[in-house]
Length: 446
Image 1 (cartoon, rainbow, N blue to C red):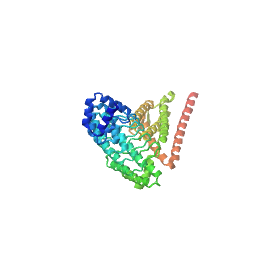
Image 2: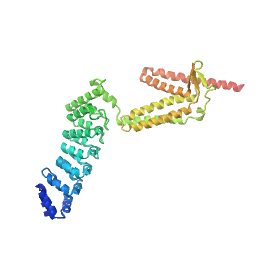
Image 3: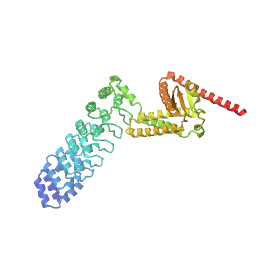
Image 4: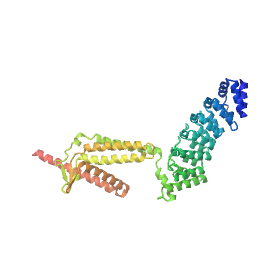
């Protein structure tokens, strides 16, 4: 049978379709022999039949034995893998028409044919593969890389441009913001490899709204592309790419001068991922503490005498000094809780799960507000002819405290005045309670 295998190989090399047909008619067991030969060889389907110049034989073999296309060699490669590297686009289309699932078969390196084509830089094969199976654009290697990442890593500019066109045509613009396991986008990799042409292409397409990239995205090292350039500013290539990125940032933020773009980038990414995670844990812990305070107030405090008269007249009474203690607690506790909720939203906003976290924050805030409304004693404060319920008063004071506190803390020179106000409020409260105790003793003595 070795002679039969040799005859078949020779017919393939000559592109002798009639010779292949003749061998198939004379030897009914030819398919079995071909399969055995494929299993012994590194090249499934005796790949010589599929190389340029043997197209007609490849078509005939695909028609006679379509199952051969799925056989893998010792490296886990199918015919489509090898065609993606060494073949031509027309042959790829032929085998894709036989079985489009071949475009999604992975080899021992977790690569599909499109990945191999991106590494080899064959733009015509890339277009053929994507036309057969557009979802192959989204398939990842074991390192979380798309075909776009691989083309950039191998500096295959033509292949990258073909992938960009195909991604746009099939509405897969999200691939340009995809990160590999190192947190690098294609813009990061193009910058690291000093591929000015690819950087310019990405920036240009992004400015024209044809694709979507985030220039200030950080990798796992907490670095943006501009920071990568600044860290290697002595290299002329990095310097040129840095200027391109700076101009792009300035165009996205026209209110900033071009030479301030670098500072803008640093401000937007001043927290590396590790720092952001620590801050998020701290803020969540503080929010939980505020929530627990509201849930575990002592019953004696909640049921404190809420005022003999259920209405306070703002023009006659010192309202702030006569409010129940629980009201003060809930004002400051609520201000702290809502501020931490806002901080959580700011910290998770750059993350992919921000919608999910935002929903949780809203639900938690609603539960907290309902809880506070149940705890606050019910009374009215009358101002002239108008009156406000205690709940409305509390939330108004909470909002005022947040705005006032943020303003004061952002202006350091007024911080001392803020603490004096707190101390004065506390002293008034203490004096009022002391007077109440003296009155109680006098009544008892009588």
